[in-house]
Length: 237
Image (cartoon, helix red, strand yellow):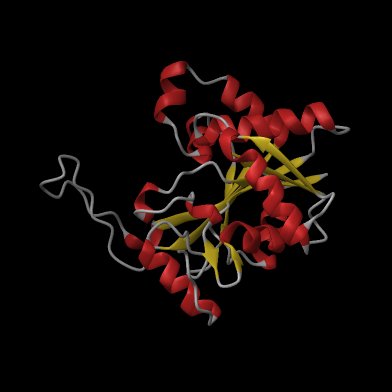
């Protein structure tokens, strides 16, 4: 089976003064989260959606999903303390709830990237069949400058080999669990990106081309830009 793990555990500190976590803010006539969920609901390649939310927002999330897209295709669970803990919670939920096999795939996606396309979803699933993990990326449009001391340039990598990471990130469920459990406590604290865990453990990680408009809404500017992209007026009073 193919699962979508929608990560909605953030509180959105960069969004400024707001009573709601960023994933629940309105984008046009519905919350950002709902726009994102809808892209997975219409995808025939996704068998089940696992939405991971903060514990104190679980009831709110359940009411929101029921209002906008009531579907038996969506399970709502509590996320963990970190991003990777949340993915692990999703994987364990899958293993404990559904008939499971080693080929099951989990496609993990930021709840505040509402412009994911069907192509990106399908290519992630396809590529994961022949790899341990898949990352969605776009080519770096600008020169990447490295400054290890944050004051002076220490390296300028060749731009042709540089990419910017997006989501989805896709894994075989059991492989994610195995890789995560193989990490030391120190590595778990340092390795916040799931695909980096796989690279460190010398797993096969493929890339899928993302889209420049597959943006992550984290600031008021991002929200305004997303509204312009949809051609809607957004109010969050």
